[in-house]
Image 1 (cartoon, rainbow, N blue to C red):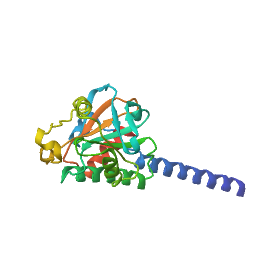
Image 2 (cartoon, rainbow, N blue to C red):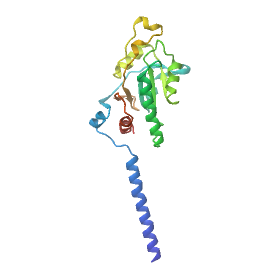
Image 3 (cartoon, rainbow, N blue to C red):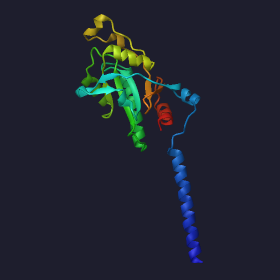
Image 4 (tube, rainbow, N blue to C red):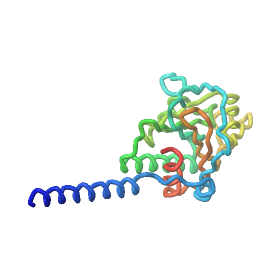
Length: 214
């Protein structure tokens, strides 16, 4: 009799543990949003992932960043510059908070990365833009390329990059002030998937990013 009671208690405990595990898993597993739900919350998903051509940017220590950099990683790409007064600090801070929150939730970040691309290659050096990116998170990357390469990639990723007037090549960057750019998402297969649209709201960014990248 006592043996039957013990078995029953063990079975009840196992059942409760299973239910609790399923409940916790449901709470922690990101919900997959529909395309319209993603759009309402600030993420535009391309109807078809888009191939992008190869590129070559330079980061600190003369490190080359090419299309291979994107392989097997979920990559957020933001176009900015080190002397940006408003948009860049706000957007990069939002990405930093996104990664911090994901880390605090115990989410896997091993296949997640961030690349900041300078839209002011006439003034930003590879070391400066990389240091700027790492100022938000030590694992972020910053890189620079010659303007034709920059414009080519930006155009493929639906980002508007304004070419400076000739007189601005000597250190002035007034043509870049108050720019507003999307945060681009590229998948592990190196294809352009979509973009997060400004203004960025922390809760919405977290919700949509988890839905598409987990």
